[in-house]
Length: 395
Image 1: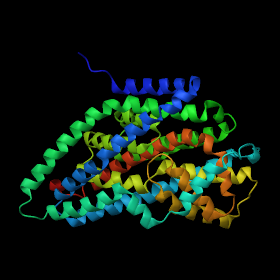
Image 2: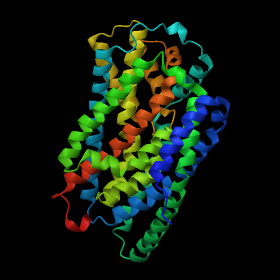
Image 3: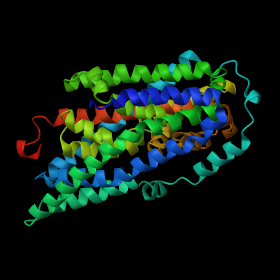
Image 4: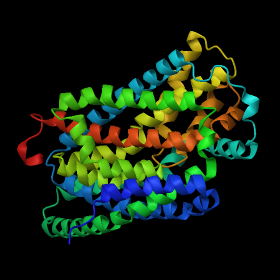
């Protein structure tokens, strides 16, 4: 019996979720548990997969210099691409003026929700970010343990045991991925049922501008990076199409993180680079979130008729360059980061967040998909830069 196509199942679930949320909003909101449950289940795999992948990858490297070189290249790449995403978002928002002509009083109806995000933003600290970011903690531990393991004479049985565990974890993950249609159904049904398709109409220009900018970044900047890597961007997107649909349905790029690592290895990216670049990228290479933050801030300045001076624009770029790194790849984190950005800039009221509450979930899908693609391309770019720089035994 032929196995059903998971991509088609997820796509059908997304469409069904939209229909349920639109025609039966109350039932759509009740289905939130399906989306949250699937994301929670996938999160259970992130820590063991990152640990196993990074540990085995580092144990296979015979030089600390190689590890340091890969990490430095990744950090430089992250900074360059997120800065490019930031400048692109500012430029398109300035050009299209999506906030011009909107009355902020029409949307000032969600004071309680705004207060919630503002409180979370006020509690942000980099120490707290590290302590609450399990992926980053596991990455650090795995780097240290893998480096030590690679230099221990009696490492063979330990590595064999880790490889056995890795095979079984990935096998179980493949089974769990068949629950993805339920997660996509629940996530999309809740989004449409909670906010309604009608919420898109007043802010359609902003929605269109954000999606246009994301497309320009993906097919422009990331397309050029992929060409330099010697790969086709479209071929890569076809390779991860199931993960893209899962992100579309759940609005969380983290829901596809484990499977993205699997797909990158099957695409030819070495395991050590996948294990090091992808988990770090989910904390520091959020291209989609950066684009969204830049455009959202410019949108609010236009709504409130605030004209930024050249000095304020430079300050905005600096603040966003920092705050965008403090957003993890999970639903709602970008909105908290936006609140912290507005509080740092002090040029528009934080209460302006109320204008975006109704459409943030829909734009979350665009930024999560961009984050996913961006981190995949980052791993391939670092791998390309390592060709000819890494001894064959370390690849």
